Image: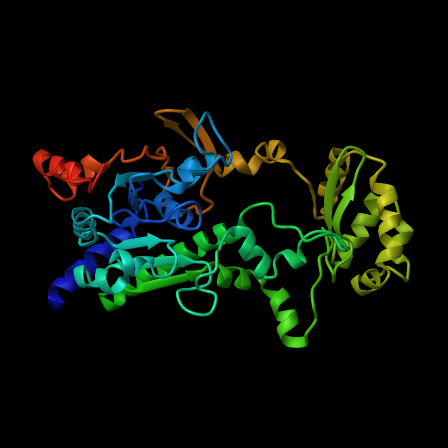
Length: 418
Protein backbone atom coordinates (compact mmCIF):
# COMPACT_ATOMS: atom_id res chain seq x y z
CA UNK A 1 0.00 0.00 0.00
CA UNK A 2 2.85 2.39 0.89
CA UNK A 3 4.57 1.68 -2.42
CA UNK A 4 1.33 2.33 -4.32
CA UNK A 5 0.88 5.65 -2.52
CA UNK A 6 4.46 6.62 -3.27
CA UNK A 7 3.99 5.91 -6.98
CA UNK A 8 0.73 7.89 -7.04
CA UNK A 9 2.28 10.88 -5.31
CA UNK A 10 5.34 10.86 -7.55
CA UNK A 11 3.15 10.81 -10.65
CA UNK A 12 0.87 13.61 -9.43
CA UNK A 13 3.83 15.72 -8.36
CA UNK A 14 5.18 15.61 -11.88
CA UNK A 15 1.78 16.62 -13.22
CA UNK A 16 0.93 19.35 -10.72
CA UNK A 17 4.32 21.04 -10.80
CA UNK A 18 4.29 20.80 -14.61
CA UNK A 19 7.48 20.92 -16.64
CA UNK A 20 9.32 23.01 -19.17
CA UNK A 21 6.92 21.83 -21.86
CA UNK A 22 5.02 24.88 -23.06
CA UNK A 23 1.90 22.79 -23.68
CA UNK A 24 1.76 21.52 -20.09
CA UNK A 25 -0.50 23.54 -17.83
CA UNK A 26 0.35 23.80 -14.16
CA UNK A 27 -2.67 21.87 -12.88
CA UNK A 28 -3.06 19.39 -15.73
CA UNK A 29 -4.11 16.06 -14.27
CA UNK A 30 -5.96 17.53 -11.28
CA UNK A 31 -9.67 16.69 -11.38
CA UNK A 32 -12.13 18.82 -9.40
CA UNK A 33 -15.79 17.96 -8.83
CA UNK A 34 -17.61 21.23 -8.27
CA UNK A 35 -20.87 21.23 -6.36
CA UNK A 36 -20.66 24.99 -5.86
CA UNK A 37 -23.18 27.52 -7.11
CA UNK A 38 -23.44 31.25 -7.90
CA UNK A 39 -20.03 32.85 -7.10
CA UNK A 40 -18.50 31.77 -3.80
CA UNK A 41 -18.62 28.10 -4.76
CA UNK A 42 -17.54 28.56 -8.37
CA UNK A 43 -14.91 31.30 -8.58
CA UNK A 44 -12.13 29.36 -6.86
CA UNK A 45 -12.41 26.35 -9.13
CA UNK A 46 -12.71 28.64 -12.16
CA UNK A 47 -9.34 30.16 -11.27
CA UNK A 48 -7.89 26.66 -11.02
CA UNK A 49 -9.45 25.64 -14.33
CA UNK A 50 -7.62 28.55 -15.95
CA UNK A 51 -4.41 26.88 -14.78
CA UNK A 52 -5.29 23.55 -16.32
CA UNK A 53 -7.37 21.70 -13.72
CA UNK A 54 -10.24 19.62 -15.09
CA UNK A 55 -13.35 21.02 -13.40
CA UNK A 56 -16.58 19.05 -13.63
CA UNK A 57 -19.70 20.84 -12.42
CA UNK A 58 -22.05 18.40 -10.75
CA UNK A 59 -25.39 20.15 -11.17
CA UNK A 60 -28.86 19.27 -9.89
CA UNK A 61 -31.58 18.68 -12.50
CA UNK A 62 -32.56 22.38 -12.50
CA UNK A 63 -28.93 23.52 -12.73
CA UNK A 64 -26.64 25.87 -10.84
CA UNK A 65 -28.72 28.74 -9.46
CA UNK A 66 -26.26 31.05 -11.21
CA UNK A 67 -27.85 30.05 -14.52
CA UNK A 68 -31.13 31.59 -13.42
CA UNK A 69 -29.94 34.99 -12.23
CA UNK A 70 -30.53 38.15 -14.21
CA UNK A 71 -27.14 39.55 -13.21
CA UNK A 72 -25.21 40.98 -16.16
CA UNK A 73 -27.63 39.47 -18.72
CA UNK A 74 -26.11 38.64 -22.08
CA UNK A 75 -28.27 37.60 -25.02
CA UNK A 76 -30.80 35.90 -22.79
CA UNK A 77 -28.18 34.13 -20.67
CA UNK A 78 -26.88 34.83 -17.18
CA UNK A 79 -23.71 36.86 -17.53
CA UNK A 80 -22.79 35.72 -14.04
CA UNK A 81 -22.84 32.07 -15.08
CA UNK A 82 -20.96 32.75 -18.32
CA UNK A 83 -18.26 34.50 -16.29
CA UNK A 84 -17.63 32.07 -13.44
CA UNK A 85 -17.95 28.80 -15.31
CA UNK A 86 -15.58 29.04 -18.24
CA UNK A 87 -13.31 26.04 -18.82
CA UNK A 88 -15.70 23.71 -16.98
CA UNK A 89 -17.74 20.66 -17.92
CA UNK A 90 -21.29 20.03 -16.75
CA UNK A 91 -22.88 16.82 -15.54
CA UNK A 92 -26.42 16.63 -14.21
CA UNK A 93 -26.56 14.12 -11.36
CA UNK A 94 -29.45 13.81 -8.94
CA UNK A 95 -27.65 13.28 -5.62
CA UNK A 96 -30.98 12.62 -3.91
CA UNK A 97 -31.43 9.39 -5.85
CA UNK A 98 -29.59 6.21 -4.88
CA UNK A 99 -28.22 5.65 -8.37
CA UNK A 100 -27.22 9.28 -8.71
CA UNK A 101 -25.36 9.17 -5.41
CA UNK A 102 -23.59 5.97 -6.45
CA UNK A 103 -22.55 7.62 -9.72
CA UNK A 104 -21.14 10.56 -7.80
CA UNK A 105 -19.28 8.21 -5.48
CA UNK A 106 -17.70 6.53 -8.50
CA UNK A 107 -16.47 9.91 -9.70
CA UNK A 108 -15.05 10.72 -6.27
CA UNK A 109 -12.94 7.57 -6.44
CA UNK A 110 -11.06 8.94 -9.46
CA UNK A 111 -10.96 12.64 -8.54
CA UNK A 112 -8.71 14.88 -6.47
CA UNK A 113 -10.95 17.62 -5.09
CA UNK A 114 -14.62 18.20 -4.28
CA UNK A 115 -15.79 21.82 -3.86
CA UNK A 116 -19.10 23.04 -2.43
CA UNK A 117 -20.74 26.05 -0.84
CA UNK A 118 -23.69 24.29 0.79
CA UNK A 119 -25.15 25.37 4.11
CA UNK A 120 -23.79 23.48 7.13
CA UNK A 121 -25.49 20.10 7.47
CA UNK A 122 -26.36 19.64 3.79
CA UNK A 123 -23.29 17.52 3.04
CA UNK A 124 -24.19 15.12 5.84
CA UNK A 125 -27.82 14.99 4.69
CA UNK A 126 -26.72 14.11 1.14
CA UNK A 127 -24.14 11.62 2.47
CA UNK A 128 -21.28 13.42 0.75
CA UNK A 129 -19.51 14.82 3.81
CA UNK A 130 -15.75 14.40 4.12
CA UNK A 131 -15.92 11.34 6.34
CA UNK A 132 -18.10 9.59 3.75
CA UNK A 133 -15.92 10.60 0.81
CA UNK A 134 -12.60 9.67 2.39
CA UNK A 135 -13.89 6.11 2.79
CA UNK A 136 -14.10 6.00 -0.99
CA UNK A 137 -10.82 7.79 -1.69
CA UNK A 138 -8.43 8.65 1.12
CA UNK A 139 -6.62 11.07 -1.18
CA UNK A 140 -9.71 13.20 -1.77
CA UNK A 141 -9.64 16.86 -0.75
CA UNK A 142 -12.96 18.45 0.14
CA UNK A 143 -13.23 22.23 0.19
CA UNK A 144 -16.35 23.84 1.66
CA UNK A 145 -17.09 27.56 1.43
CA UNK A 146 -19.63 28.75 4.02
CA UNK A 147 -20.74 32.07 5.43
CA UNK A 148 -19.58 31.62 9.01
CA UNK A 149 -18.09 28.14 9.18
CA UNK A 150 -19.62 24.74 9.81
CA UNK A 151 -19.84 25.19 13.58
CA UNK A 152 -20.60 28.02 15.95
CA UNK A 153 -23.44 30.35 16.81
CA UNK A 154 -23.76 31.91 13.34
CA UNK A 155 -23.35 28.80 11.21
CA UNK A 156 -26.99 28.77 10.05
CA UNK A 157 -27.34 32.48 9.29
CA UNK A 158 -27.91 33.53 5.66
CA UNK A 159 -24.62 34.45 4.02
CA UNK A 160 -25.29 36.65 1.01
CA UNK A 161 -22.50 38.98 -0.07
CA UNK A 162 -24.01 42.16 1.37
CA UNK A 163 -24.67 40.37 4.67
CA UNK A 164 -21.00 39.42 4.99
CA UNK A 165 -19.82 42.88 3.90
CA UNK A 166 -22.03 44.40 6.57
CA UNK A 167 -21.34 42.12 9.52
CA UNK A 168 -17.60 41.94 8.84
CA UNK A 169 -17.21 45.71 9.30
CA UNK A 170 -16.32 46.33 5.68
CA UNK A 171 -19.28 48.62 5.00
CA UNK A 172 -18.48 50.70 8.09
CA UNK A 173 -15.17 51.79 6.55
CA UNK A 174 -16.41 52.18 2.96
CA UNK A 175 -17.97 55.28 1.42
CA UNK A 176 -17.96 58.96 2.32
CA UNK A 177 -17.87 60.32 5.90
CA UNK A 178 -21.24 61.15 7.44
CA UNK A 179 -23.07 59.32 4.68
CA UNK A 180 -25.06 56.04 4.80
CA UNK A 181 -22.95 52.84 4.71
CA UNK A 182 -21.80 51.76 1.25
CA UNK A 183 -20.98 48.31 -0.03
CA UNK A 184 -17.95 47.63 -2.18
CA UNK A 185 -18.92 47.82 -5.86
CA UNK A 186 -18.15 44.15 -6.52
CA UNK A 187 -19.37 41.12 -4.49
CA UNK A 188 -16.08 41.03 -2.64
CA UNK A 189 -17.24 38.59 0.05
CA UNK A 190 -18.23 36.02 -2.56
CA UNK A 191 -15.11 36.66 -4.62
CA UNK A 192 -12.89 36.58 -1.55
CA UNK A 193 -14.38 33.24 -0.58
CA UNK A 194 -13.51 31.92 -4.02
CA UNK A 195 -9.96 33.26 -4.05
CA UNK A 196 -9.15 31.95 -0.57
CA UNK A 197 -10.72 28.58 -1.38
CA UNK A 198 -8.42 28.14 -4.38
CA UNK A 199 -5.51 29.01 -2.10
CA UNK A 200 -6.63 26.37 0.38
CA UNK A 201 -7.04 23.75 -2.34
CA UNK A 202 -3.52 24.35 -3.65
CA UNK A 203 -2.13 24.10 -0.11
CA UNK A 204 -4.03 20.84 0.43
CA UNK A 205 -2.70 19.41 -2.85
CA UNK A 206 0.84 20.26 -1.79
CA UNK A 207 0.26 18.79 1.67
CA UNK A 208 -0.98 15.59 0.05
CA UNK A 209 2.34 15.25 -1.74
CA UNK A 210 3.99 14.94 1.67
CA UNK A 211 1.38 12.93 3.56
CA UNK A 212 -0.17 10.77 0.83
CA UNK A 213 -3.70 11.51 2.07
CA UNK A 214 -6.30 14.17 1.44
CA UNK A 215 -7.83 16.59 3.90
CA UNK A 216 -10.77 18.89 4.48
CA UNK A 217 -10.48 22.60 3.67
CA UNK A 218 -12.94 24.96 5.36
CA UNK A 219 -13.34 28.53 4.19
CA UNK A 220 -15.63 31.03 5.90
CA UNK A 221 -16.52 34.15 3.91
CA UNK A 222 -16.69 36.04 7.21
CA UNK A 223 -13.15 34.92 8.05
CA UNK A 224 -12.00 35.94 4.58
CA UNK A 225 -13.30 39.47 5.04
CA UNK A 226 -11.78 39.77 8.53
CA UNK A 227 -8.45 38.79 6.98
CA UNK A 228 -8.84 41.48 4.32
CA UNK A 229 -9.46 44.11 6.99
CA UNK A 230 -5.68 43.78 7.52
CA UNK A 231 -4.21 46.84 9.27
CA UNK A 232 -7.67 48.30 9.83
CA UNK A 233 -8.36 45.37 12.13
CA UNK A 234 -4.97 45.82 13.77
CA UNK A 235 -5.78 49.46 14.55
CA UNK A 236 -8.76 48.38 16.61
CA UNK A 237 -7.26 45.27 18.19
CA UNK A 238 -4.04 46.95 19.35
CA UNK A 239 -5.08 50.46 20.39
CA UNK A 240 -8.87 50.53 20.11
CA UNK A 241 -8.69 53.12 17.34
CA UNK A 242 -11.93 52.88 15.38
CA UNK A 243 -11.47 53.44 11.61
CA UNK A 244 -14.15 55.46 9.86
CA UNK A 245 -15.07 55.82 6.18
CA UNK A 246 -12.73 58.21 4.38
CA UNK A 247 -14.11 58.24 0.85
CA UNK A 248 -11.07 58.25 -1.42
CA UNK A 249 -8.91 59.93 1.25
CA UNK A 250 -6.28 58.23 3.42
CA UNK A 251 -6.38 58.93 7.14
CA UNK A 252 -2.61 59.10 7.51
CA UNK A 253 -1.46 60.43 4.13
CA UNK A 254 -2.01 63.76 2.34
CA UNK A 255 -2.46 64.22 -0.57
CA UNK A 256 -3.83 60.75 -1.22
CA UNK A 257 -7.28 61.02 -2.75
CA UNK A 258 -9.38 61.80 -5.81
CA UNK A 259 -9.49 65.31 -7.19
CA UNK A 260 -11.90 66.79 -9.71
CA UNK A 261 -10.33 67.99 -12.96
CA UNK A 262 -12.08 69.91 -15.74
CA UNK A 263 -13.52 66.76 -17.34
CA UNK A 264 -13.36 64.02 -14.73
CA UNK A 265 -11.49 62.73 -11.71
CA UNK A 266 -7.94 61.62 -11.04
CA UNK A 267 -6.20 60.34 -7.93
CA UNK A 268 -2.92 61.49 -6.43
CA UNK A 269 -0.79 59.46 -4.01
CA UNK A 270 2.04 61.76 -2.94
CA UNK A 271 2.96 60.66 0.55
CA UNK A 272 6.74 60.92 0.29
CA UNK A 273 8.17 64.42 0.41
CA UNK A 274 9.96 63.94 -2.91
CA UNK A 275 6.61 63.31 -4.60
CA UNK A 276 5.06 66.22 -2.76
CA UNK A 277 7.72 68.58 -4.09
CA UNK A 278 7.26 67.30 -7.64
CA UNK A 279 3.49 67.64 -7.31
CA UNK A 280 3.82 71.27 -6.25
CA UNK A 281 6.09 71.93 -9.21
CA UNK A 282 3.62 70.45 -11.72
CA UNK A 283 0.75 72.36 -10.10
CA UNK A 284 2.80 75.55 -10.46
CA UNK A 285 2.65 76.07 -6.70
CA UNK A 286 6.38 75.97 -5.84
CA UNK A 287 6.01 77.93 -2.60
CA UNK A 288 3.58 75.34 -1.26
CA UNK A 289 6.30 72.70 -0.85
CA UNK A 290 8.32 74.95 1.44
CA UNK A 291 5.31 76.19 3.42
CA UNK A 292 5.90 75.17 7.06
CA UNK A 293 2.32 73.95 7.29
CA UNK A 294 2.85 71.37 4.54
CA UNK A 295 6.56 70.43 4.53
CA UNK A 296 6.17 66.87 5.85
CA UNK A 297 3.40 64.34 5.50
CA UNK A 298 2.54 64.76 9.17
CA UNK A 299 2.26 68.51 8.64
CA UNK A 300 -0.03 67.94 5.68
CA UNK A 301 -2.23 65.53 7.64
CA UNK A 302 -2.59 68.04 10.47
CA UNK A 303 -3.46 70.82 8.00
CA UNK A 304 -5.50 68.77 5.55
CA UNK A 305 -8.52 71.09 5.72
CA UNK A 306 -6.36 74.02 4.61
CA UNK A 307 -4.32 72.20 1.97
CA UNK A 308 -6.95 70.22 0.09
CA UNK A 309 -9.03 73.24 -1.04
CA UNK A 310 -5.85 74.85 -2.40
CA UNK A 311 -5.13 71.74 -4.46
CA UNK A 312 -8.74 71.44 -5.60
CA UNK A 313 -8.62 74.97 -7.00
CA UNK A 314 -5.67 73.98 -9.18
CA UNK A 315 -6.87 70.58 -10.38
CA UNK A 316 -10.15 71.95 -11.74
CA UNK A 317 -8.29 74.16 -14.24
CA UNK A 318 -7.12 71.40 -16.60
CA UNK A 319 -8.28 68.09 -18.04
CA UNK A 320 -7.42 64.70 -16.61
CA UNK A 321 -5.30 63.86 -19.65
CA UNK A 322 -3.28 67.07 -19.38
CA UNK A 323 -2.58 66.53 -15.70
CA UNK A 324 -1.64 62.89 -16.17
CA UNK A 325 0.84 63.69 -18.92
CA UNK A 326 2.71 66.14 -16.69
CA UNK A 327 2.48 64.01 -13.55
CA UNK A 328 3.83 60.93 -15.28
CA UNK A 329 6.69 62.87 -16.84
CA UNK A 330 7.56 64.21 -13.37
CA UNK A 331 7.19 60.81 -11.70
CA UNK A 332 4.25 61.78 -9.49
CA UNK A 333 1.99 58.80 -8.63
CA UNK A 334 -1.29 59.62 -10.36
CA UNK A 335 -4.04 57.81 -12.24
CA UNK A 336 -7.41 58.52 -13.85
CA UNK A 337 -10.59 57.35 -12.16
CA UNK A 338 -11.58 55.05 -15.01
CA UNK A 339 -15.01 53.77 -15.86
CA UNK A 340 -15.07 50.31 -17.41
CA UNK A 341 -15.03 51.71 -20.92
CA UNK A 342 -11.71 53.36 -20.16
CA UNK A 343 -10.13 50.61 -18.07
CA UNK A 344 -10.36 47.98 -20.81
CA UNK A 345 -8.54 50.37 -23.13
CA UNK A 346 -5.52 50.66 -20.83
CA UNK A 347 -2.32 49.14 -22.32
CA UNK A 348 -1.72 46.48 -19.61
CA UNK A 349 -5.06 44.85 -20.47
CA UNK A 350 -3.85 43.71 -23.89
CA UNK A 351 -0.19 43.44 -22.92
CA UNK A 352 -0.99 40.93 -20.19
CA UNK A 353 -3.82 39.13 -21.97
CA UNK A 354 -6.40 40.19 -19.43
CA UNK A 355 -9.32 39.80 -21.82
CA UNK A 356 -10.19 36.26 -22.82
CA UNK A 357 -12.98 35.16 -25.10
CA UNK A 358 -14.80 32.03 -26.12
CA UNK A 359 -17.50 30.98 -28.54
CA UNK A 360 -20.63 29.88 -26.73
CA UNK A 361 -22.97 27.58 -28.70
CA UNK A 362 -26.06 29.64 -27.83
CA UNK A 363 -24.90 33.24 -27.37
CA UNK A 364 -21.86 33.45 -29.62
CA UNK A 365 -18.67 35.24 -28.67
CA UNK A 366 -18.24 36.06 -24.99
CA UNK A 367 -15.47 38.34 -23.70
CA UNK A 368 -14.52 38.41 -20.04
CA UNK A 369 -11.70 39.34 -17.65
CA UNK A 370 -8.79 36.90 -17.64
CA UNK A 371 -6.73 35.26 -14.91
CA UNK A 372 -4.07 37.50 -13.32
CA UNK A 373 -1.74 34.56 -12.60
CA UNK A 374 0.91 34.22 -15.30
CA UNK A 375 3.15 31.15 -15.04
CA UNK A 376 6.41 30.75 -16.90
CA UNK A 377 6.17 27.96 -19.47
CA UNK A 378 2.37 28.22 -19.59
CA UNK A 379 1.92 30.35 -22.69
CA UNK A 380 -1.45 29.10 -23.91
CA UNK A 381 -4.51 30.82 -22.45
CA UNK A 382 -7.25 28.29 -21.71
CA UNK A 383 -10.62 29.65 -22.81
CA UNK A 384 -13.46 27.20 -23.21
CA UNK A 385 -17.13 28.17 -23.02
CA UNK A 386 -19.25 27.89 -19.92
CA UNK A 387 -21.11 24.59 -20.38
CA UNK A 388 -24.72 24.01 -21.24
CA UNK A 389 -26.67 22.22 -18.54
CA UNK A 390 -25.64 18.56 -18.58
CA UNK A 391 -23.64 19.06 -21.76
CA UNK A 392 -20.96 16.54 -20.76
CA UNK A 393 -22.97 14.04 -18.71
CA UNK A 394 -22.99 11.20 -21.21
CA UNK A 395 -19.49 11.91 -22.50
CA UNK A 396 -17.95 11.71 -19.02
CA UNK A 397 -19.93 8.67 -17.97
CA UNK A 398 -18.44 6.91 -20.97
CA UNK A 399 -14.88 8.21 -20.74
CA UNK A 400 -14.39 8.27 -16.96
CA UNK A 401 -16.69 5.56 -15.63
CA UNK A 402 -16.64 3.36 -18.75
CA UNK A 403 -20.43 3.01 -18.75
CA UNK A 404 -22.15 1.50 -21.76
CA UNK A 405 -25.01 3.22 -23.64
CA UNK A 406 -27.48 0.83 -22.03
CA UNK A 407 -26.18 1.58 -18.53
CA UNK A 408 -26.41 5.30 -19.20
CA UNK A 409 -29.95 4.85 -20.47
CA UNK A 410 -30.89 3.03 -17.26
CA UNK A 411 -29.49 5.86 -15.15
CA UNK A 412 -31.42 8.40 -17.18
CA UNK A 413 -34.68 6.45 -16.90
CA UNK A 414 -34.14 6.11 -13.16
CA UNK A 415 -33.88 9.89 -12.83
CA UNK A 416 -30.27 9.68 -11.64
CA UNK A 417 -28.87 11.78 -14.48
CA UNK A 418 -30.06 14.08 -17.23
